[in-house]
Amino acid sequence: MLMNAYKKIFLVMLGMLCVTACGNKQAERESTSLDTYLKDTSTGIKTGGTKVIEINTPKGKFKVWTKRIGNNPKIKLLLLNGGPGATHEYFECMESFLPQEGIEFIYYDQLGTGNSDNPNDPTFWDLGRYVEEVEQVRQALDLDQSNFYLLGHSWGGILVSQYALKYQQHLKGLIISNMMMSAIDYDKYADEVLAKQMDPSVLAKIREIEENKDFENPQYMELLMPNFYAKHILRLDPEKWPEPVNRSFSKINQSLYVTMQGPSEFGLSGKLEKWDIKKELPKLAVPTLSIGARYDTMDPEHMKWIASQVKNGTYLYCPNGSHMSMYDDQDIYMKGLIKFLKDTDAADQNRK
Image 1 (cartoon, rainbow, N blue to C red):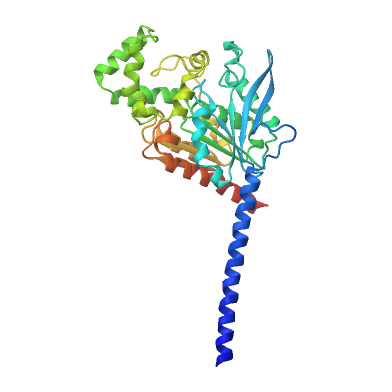
Image 2 (spheres, rainbow, N blue to C red):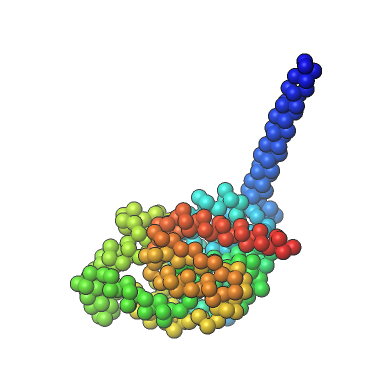
């Protein structure tokens, strides 16, 4: 009996040691993973992940700015901001979510924006040229089909979808965030749905300013901010908009914005006025996540439809969000993005 008791005690202690050892190994694995994520694998003088890339254009060479956060050989997410003409800075919210998941992501200021060169020449503001710029950035960062995820928000969504139609062989995953695949449909949605939700007297005044092309009139923004931006761009009191958003928007390249979109919020008139790739979506075979939001400037039903048109599509709906749903429906946006990245990576690993 006594021997049996000792044996039982020994087995219990052995079990506890096993549990402790397993726990230590798990902690060691997590620590190793974190160490790997935080390790700067670049050679030479360390710059905190910043890399300035020289790009070739029809009018010479220019430099664009990038910055890598983290290190993950299987998931590298390149971020393309909207505007057109804003900066990478409003993506800084990603730092509160992606590092803890071990997801590497890369900030990138497109030519003419933020920390990148600005040629101050509207002939550079061209969708086809930007597609080739993204491809040169991809090559310089050693991104390929084994690790390259591309996220474009708003105007960035136009750019990444156009890029994917030409270069999807280099992509592991594509995220089209808060963007329709037709500027014509977007224009129609703004006019027939969003405009009709506004106070008629406010809308009439906005229309009057636009018809007079009086866009520098301070009343224009005074009307748009509470009646449109705070309802469909970012659903917060404008006084409480996050600092990275304000910082990014304050630096917007107006020449780029007006050239591509035109000066009006209710009526496209720039180079993107007739852009439409709806019929080309079935050509996209790369895993694709389309993100839409209930209060967006873009039609959420259209963005849901995108996921049904590509060959391997998923839709993420943000029921409380607007155009900047990475802020005003943050939990759903970030969890959905992380799930897509990890699920796509797992599916890729299972195929190998």
